[in-house]
Amino acid sequence: MHRRNFLKSSGTLISGLPLINFNQFNIFKKTFLMDDEVVKIKVGKFDCILLRDLMFKYLAKDFFINASQEELSESLKKYNVTSENIPSPFIALLLQFEDKKVLIDTGIGFLEKPLIFRDNSYVFQGRLQQLLQNENIKKEDITDVIITHFHPDHIGGLFTDDEKLNFPNAKFHMHEAEWDYWHSSQSDTQPALFKYFIEKNVTLLKNLNLNLFKGDFVNLLPGITAVEANGHTPGQIALNIHSENEHLLYISDAFLHPLHIERLDWQTNYDWEHQKAKQSRIKLLELAYKENMLVNAFHFNFPGLGRIDKFQNNWIWKYSEY
Ligand SMILES: [Zn+2]
Image (tube, rainbow, N blue to C red; front, side, top):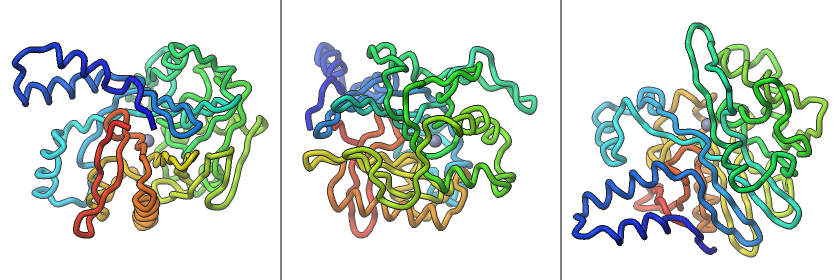
């Protein structure tokens, strides 16, 4: 696996600064990464582009609902975040190989005007479309779109504000369990904003080029395998992207923060079913660890790349560059 421009520019910048002390170096590096929007890596035959659609801010009380106050504040310190501000990107992934351009998740979308919903105003102006354009990739060029689950930050970019399909030539892959749940009365207790995003995006795909698949370890395209990872939602999938003995495991929202890897009992408000979510977490950790896979997490610090390690029976997340 070759790393390309990852951190290249930050290295150049840092080496040009005289007498910088260690702390400043760390702060500087973090500041630089916060601004990064595109990272390119190679996984076997796949040219991968990681795209940061948006930066969002979550609260510890939603991310870690059953953690003890004391343990939580210690842990948050370790990650240099506060309970009021856990910065979190939305990361889409584009895979290019042979004549295919495969987009995995579509970000929150771009709305011209703020969305007023139940008297709250939301400004959702994701950068994905712009970033693809910067890479000279047209919406028409996308051959496949894989949706890992139907939360707004993953489906918002399927249609434009005025209901035009963003990727007119693509085949759309998603798990049938996810589709069935959100299109049945079972999901009536879910936030209305989620249902709204699904109506405006996913449901409109019904009569288009839709591949609703069932089962576990399903090969969607050569070298791209869907792995069931439900719990966060009823039909969430992870993706094992594999080629020439290299692997990239796209874990989507099975983990929202590295602390969910280190503390498997810490639950989040955003999960549909906690026990199932935990089982899926263990399944993915074992899979990644066994093959020493590179892992990509949708909400971890951009570009969300790292590997899974184990120490005294505890799982550990290690951010890595490639
Ligand atoms: Zn998400």
